[in-house]
Image (cartoon, rainbow over the protein chains, first blue to last red):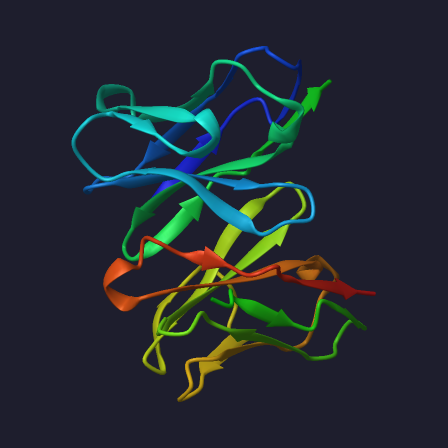
Length: 111
Length: 113
């Protein structure tokens, strides 16, 4: 079964700082990888996804993620965060027709 | 387009009781997924229904069960509630050929006392 590890569960940073959230997965088959975001009081929504091709994926709101197959990683990055990026971020891997999620990163951006 | 809806928003039950949670998928979506989001544990996959059939199940005991109705809405039942069942239960839906693109509802907060 697939599994996902996310590190640094709580991240606090100032506006304009850069953000990088780590995600490592384990799955023996072809992976589809995702980052979801849950803003305070809102639904979980898809931020970006990787299926194949260019390992650098660009998503909404200036986020990007890089798939490194040799490291089983799919790290999320944003060069300059805003207060509105305060949210919980979840990495997920799809395999066996199910999504396996990590435990999430709670990100707080201080104005 | 209406999103995934879930009811009730909050549910308070006593240990040993049964809870029933409901989900209506986005129009045109035939697959429904259930997840448990417990504090500090992230989202755990519970069940996947498609075309009225249970297609996949996560590592949860049999007292977690559900069904999907002909209109593709779904029900999650939790029997013999335990304190550790307290969590946010999320429902998601997708079209069958795009099971990777799941749209989530707002969740039902279940509290077991």
